[in-house]
Image (cartoon, rainbow, N blue to C red):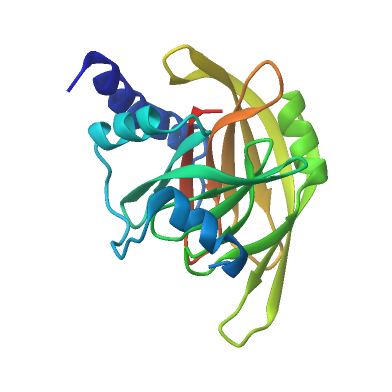
Length: 221
């Protein structure tokens, strides 16, 4: 293992710990199939922790944007590559045909994780987070139930800028905490690492009761 990959592993652990500390709280799209196949080939493997060698190999094999995704409750990790770009939205895919959609680094939808986040209303929250400013924002998440019914969850989020956090060597930003509450749903606290340009380069984000918290680390943008 090289010094670079050792540092990357240590930083992921440090990032997860920092994000968890900042955010303590009380509690296959067919259209993309060809892109997945071209990038990854076929894979039937479940998510599992990935090695630094795998990350290094991925970064060496492509010039595409790459991120590292960790589902905390499942103790699973994946590397995802950008497979589609549409305006401010970027779609990343894993070898297991999972997809996440980011807007300026905030997760706005998922597919293939189970209990997927179908869409969000994030404008007000994202505006505060990108500006690294304190304030209140409305935030809406939508999930599809097993009965094929769209569940709409509405939150009020209190946004607070916090300390500087390093994501990977040479890339850091300010941690911005969004503590979100609802009259009917459990509270949660997201943490976003925002660089000077207003882009989210790392995050710990709540994706609903099925998936729980996900940690995201931008390895190449």
